[in-house]
Image 1 (tube, helix red, strand yellow):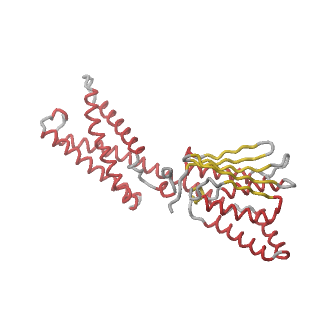
Image 2: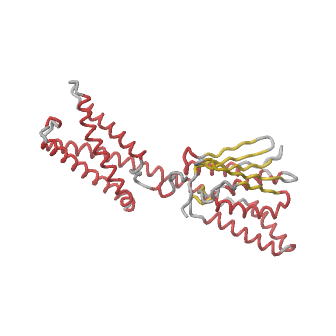
Image 3: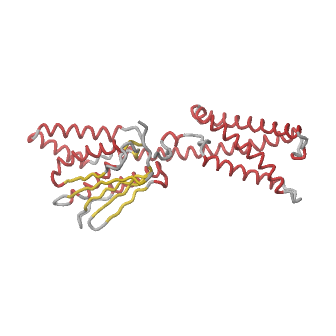
Length: 353
């Protein structure tokens, strides 16, 4: 089962919300009813007709809100392609025309059926008042959508800058160690040194050149496997990595550079500090519409490295999980006396084949 689409880079840049979504329709109806209540209170004459006037106003406003949502649902894709300024202007005039058309239809129907008492204003007054009120409400709504769009855009840009920082965070100690390992292999095992150079090249290319915010789980695991091979050449039998991920769907999407930085932390802050090394255990399972990945490594009592790099990677991953999944994703850390575990939990969203 595939989860509902999650907001990615393009969605975050969108100026208009998805008016086809049930959640958006609910908000539109709620705001429309609040506007109807405000308009009724503004015209309330204290003659005990509040509920009657509210029902008439609500009927008209809700029809306008629902028809406007239907039109914007149909036009959203086209409007987004025109740019924010044109989308603002076109949306404003489309909704105004719709409002005036509905006002005129309402007036003519009421006159045709002989129930003019429903609307006490004259024809011109009713149309002009509807036009004035709708202009204010639509303008405020458009302004809110613009501010909301800019807020989402700023969050995306900030997250992307952090992603870029993490992609460039191939720690100097890792590069130095890798180059030293390769240098030693060139004398003792040239073919293996050549493989190590190719692995290092693949890792750097994968971590620094990906333009996407998210990749498939298969791609993430391949990057982690390349990193593991390079570190295995350096640490030898001191490093063991046990993968138990058969239950995970390889097409599931996950924020870019999630697994490899966690594996790097596990080795650098855990395995490397132990004289005899140890094992990094990576397990994963699927629970209905959610995936859980747990990475556990042993730690050396009384031996600690600078936590800045470790905390930076975890903070980066947490922020990107929040951006991608909101409250539905989590990054939890469990620190024991002899172990350090990071648990990732996020909803399933499989990439299209």
